Length: 254
Ligand code: ASP
Ligand code: MG
Image 1: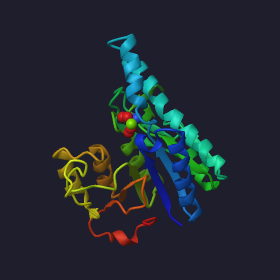
Image 2: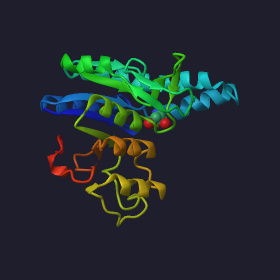
Image 3: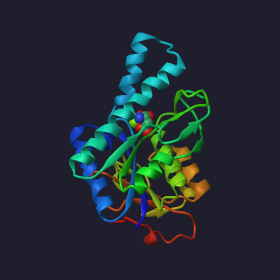
Image 4: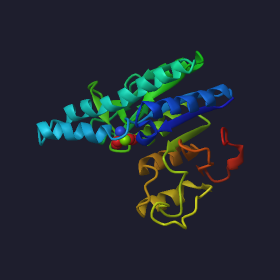
């Protein structure tokens, strides 16, 4: 049995039908005998829409209130996903960043994770439940909600995987992994089946942005294997693994 963290990005949970599809995939992973913790982004363009709403009211909104607002997006997707899993006949429990033990510094809008103490997530997993965690958010020393910067749910997922001692962190997106170039622009682009952290970081500094830079740095620091794959297909994706690890030994590759 493996402990797997799955992260689903905004395009994978864009509407309720997508959330139901994701729930099926989560339950399928659980039914294979794995423990599963899921990190979700906000649905589709929710975060952008929230920012637009704020700016239509105040061109210079207070940072604290912006983070209060933006953390709402992930709370919607986490609870709807928990319901969709319940409707599939499995047990799921959702947690905000605060409830999942994400402690950050005080930089609203670009907070850094200082510690992750996911006691409630561990407890849910030990009871046989699926744990759903809101990505992109934590709590500062004052007890206020903070966000990690745009695209921050990838980092939440890796940080949770490290704190739980997971076997792998799967990043589900709308492309079949990492390619030598953007396949939507360069038709001859090839999928990279497996790659190390350094090469990904080099690609990211050249503007390739399938994964948030901070998430890869975090994974490298703790040697957490990543599997970037599409939630819309069954294709194999890209494994990002530490040197010396045989990618074929990792769980849930099919
Ligand atoms: N919802 C946030 C954003 O759009 C976080 C994320 O998607 O990772 O930036
Ligand atoms: Mg998003």
